[in-house]
Length: 537
Image (cartoon, rainbow, N blue to C red; front, top):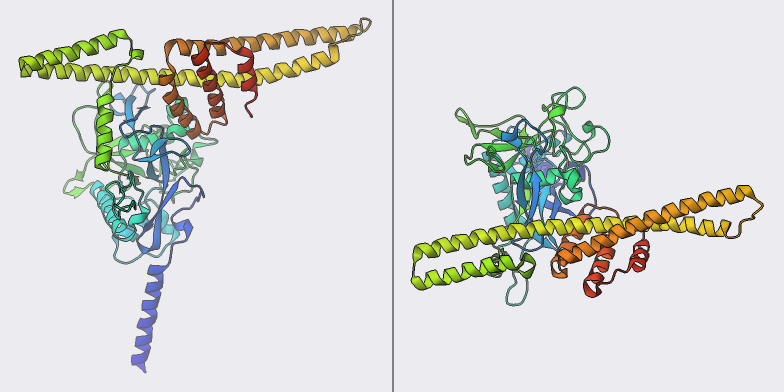
């Protein structure tokens, strides 16, 4: 009898264990703040778990294009050796045409939790519990890499099709290959990837991007778990309990500070110092004072403490999903062609640039004829530097064109608003004051005030129209349509990412006016006003 009871006991325990291991996690254990939008990636994990990622969009479309951004602390006089404001460049791994052409990478929506860590690293599946939704801390940088490695291998063995693919390769039947070199993988984010996402990227305005903290509404404690009795009380918080940043990422600042992939460097003037040190922690943590919470916060951590890898009780991480850069021979050829075009001079760069470029080419031919290897090397170096300078000037031109386009779009908004207001004033004046009673002094006085107000409104509208026309004429006198058109696409991508109301529609209207002026050189003030007023608010 006892024998059968013991057998029944083991059967029940086995069934319970199987049920625990096979039970799919409730959404609250991997996505406590579900968004139900398409800009998320849900990757499966062992033990029927999941990890959620958010799309970080970068408005550059071609593989060799990148976006220049200002990172670091642009205001502080102190800590310049640590957080100096500097230019960086970023591009996404994966390409998209929706809603507009661009590239993107995926960043984990939440800091890695104890539950997710155990699901990958332990042989037995953990039982989902709220206590396991704390950020996983006290890990070394090497253990963070080890986790990403094991998770990558599990995905490739068990859920390969769940990973995004860049530059999909087809077989002879034009079907996607079972495995593509462009298949995504997970790793720690680079510092640039982390800070671009933390600041809100293209989802915020350029001015907001430079602020110490991304735009918030209400107290900082609504968004950040920081040091003090008003916030953390010296303890980690469960992930996703505060409000997100503009990319929908939770706990980017505070709670657990987060490791990045690259090694720490000090700052020289406008560039990183040559020595690479330990690993980098970003974002501050639950012990960081409120006044020190900022997106530029960074700290060097040594890889080892005495004989042990460095494990900080405040240190956690989140992963990104990216892809290789050279995903196929076709893509490599495309990048090579793009490289050859970098820094090419055009008519827009002026005759002097073309003259210098031509002189360098002739000098190169002469050096080749002379078989002077030293001179050939020097000419090639001069040509490379010239192309780099030209490329920089072209980037600056792009920034100036986009600034002009934004000004034109805003002026079109003003024409819409001021034009509608002037129309209301004019309609009311014509209705009530067309035939005033000469004997009615109060009516005469009121109509005169209305007339003065109407004149003032029409003068203001005329001034806005003049500035708008000047913007179009100035743009057309400096640039050509072939240089403006690609910048329109980039600017529209930025406005769309920033969810800036319907400003992208005003940009379309402004671009139609500018194209028309490029074609016929006619200033069409009444038509420009009419079409700006026709944009729906």
